[in-house]
Structure formats: structure tokens, C-alpha cells
Length: 400
Image: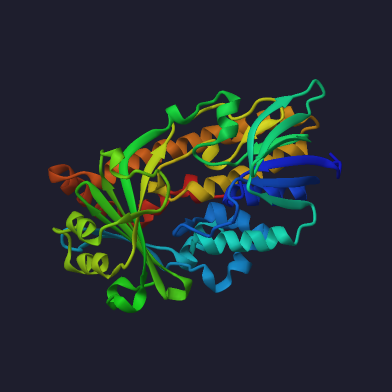
């Protein structure tokens, strides 16, 4: 079907999902305006994993090439027992991942990926970004156009569009207005992620390898991998902490006391205690999600990324699933004349898969944090499984 070149789309949110969605929509013939509620585009956050299902799509826009040396390709995933550092499983990535899944397994800093996406968006005349502008509500006219209420600074105004995409995150205003769940439906997972970027020079060689390491401990796990050419190590320690009020702010930037965080790993292998002590700045992030939903759309309005399917980070799929959403949305819009029909097809194509990822990510937390005899059985199971069977468990997720 030939796409008209003057259809207008509004995207709420200039995060990873919003930016990649805008690129896909511009390619599909839309003029796209992204409204971002923040007054500045902050490249905050920490490392993220771009598994082959995401890097394959990002490669279509040259994003992987733009990242260049800022994206690192780990040689392997190494699963270790936290108590003594024993290796339970090593799964090769690198060329092995490219051969098996048809695209690279990458790690990158969220800020570097955002910058690469913004550079690509800046080259696209059909896309504009408006900062300090928040989608507050919408109404659909009889001709299936959507009128969108915005708050821009202290001013309220209205714009019209053919399509509204809510890529506005966990606390999505678009989702709330769609009647698909508001703030009260967000579920605290009982886990808090403590994140740090550590100068690699402060760590021993064993902790600086070009590998993704996963350490499994009782009620906690640690993931670390190098970023930015190996100059820094991204570390994420996830601990069970059911005191959701212990962190007053639900955002990314709750400062952590290194001595308290060190207490969480007091019984772990000495090199991990060394890593925790080497971090100069820890930031806490309480982990929330929602139950999977089969509905994301109504008329010419739909959701994408965390707004549609916020998920625990235990499969490292938050960014990757937003990237998948963006491609599926563009495919549906290219194959359906009416936008509401396209959005129904998009949700049918994506909701079951995203829901499965949400569910599997939740299960993974329990698998990581077991203790006592159950942990011994898990560790034995990982050793028996071996790398080939482990890789096969991810074929449904990473494969084309």
C-alpha cells in the first residue's frame, strides 16, 4: 500500500522507545512530533544490554554503526556462584551469538544509545522534538483524528494528529487516559537495583574481562560488564528489599551508602566485595512492573515500550522490547489502510510476546535469588545444562 506523506503522528516521550518509534514512523511516511516532558534530554542511567533481537532492528537505521566503539560485544556470559566465585556456566557470545541469532549481542551505556538515536533523528526532516511538553489527555473525533491536550511549561494547548503513540514510560499518562491502568496498578517487585559505573583501573583484571558476569547469591544477584571500550565497568546489584518506602523517590537517582551496599555482599567472594568498595557512587532504583495486558490501543491511540509492558530487568529486555514494538508498529501501519485497524494488528502481534517476556522476567528473579538446598539444586542444574542448552533456551527471544 502506498503511504501518504502528510499523515501526522505525535509520540509522547523521547526515550529509547519514542525515538526508535519516530524513526520507523518517519520511514512509513508520517510527519512526527515527539513531545518530551523533561526540559532537557538527560543522558542518565547506566548500562543496558542490546540482545540480537534489538541490535538486528537498530542496525537497519545505522544505530549500531553510529555507536561504534561505544557499544561493546561481550565474548561470553559467565554465571558464577556469589559465595565462592565458582563458575557454574559459560556461554560464548561474540561470533557465536552472531552465527546463532543473526545479529550481535551488545552492551552500551543508555546515554550513548540515546545520543546515537538523537543523532539519527536529527538527520530526519520529518521528525521534530518539543521539550518541556507533556501529553495530558486526548479525544478522538468522528473522522478518527485525535485531539491531544498538551502542557508546555505553564501553557496548555491542543494539537491534532492522525496517530498518538504513548511511549511515556512506566507512569504513562496516555495509558492512564486509555483506561488501561494508572499509578495505582503499578506493582513494586520487592527488589531494588543498585547501579554504579566503576573506573576499570580501580579493579583487578579478573573483573575487567570483556564478558558479562552474573553472580547468583541468596536474595540478591550482581551483573557487571565493561562499557566504553573497557574503560568503565557497569555494575548492577539487585537485592530483595520489601521496604518500598526505603527509597523516597521511584526514579533512578536515589544515592546509596557504599557501606550499607557492601553489607549486602558481606558473605560473597572477596573480589565482589572489592568491586563494591571501588564504586564511588551508587544509585538505587526500585523495580516496578505491571501484569501483562492484552490491550494497548483504542482508535488511533496506542502504547509502546514501558508504557505498554513495563518489566523487571532480569532478562535485560526493557529496551529490546521497545525496539521490537517500534518495528511491529511500522509494519502494521504499512499493511493497513485505517490506523485503528493497524493498531489492533500491532497489539495482536506484540502483546502475547511482550507478555511472555514480562512473565519470564518475573520468574527469573525467583531463580536467581533462591537459597539453601534449592540454590544447590539450581547450581547443579546450570552445570549439567551447559552452554548449548542454555543458548537454546534463548532462541525464542533472540532469534529472528
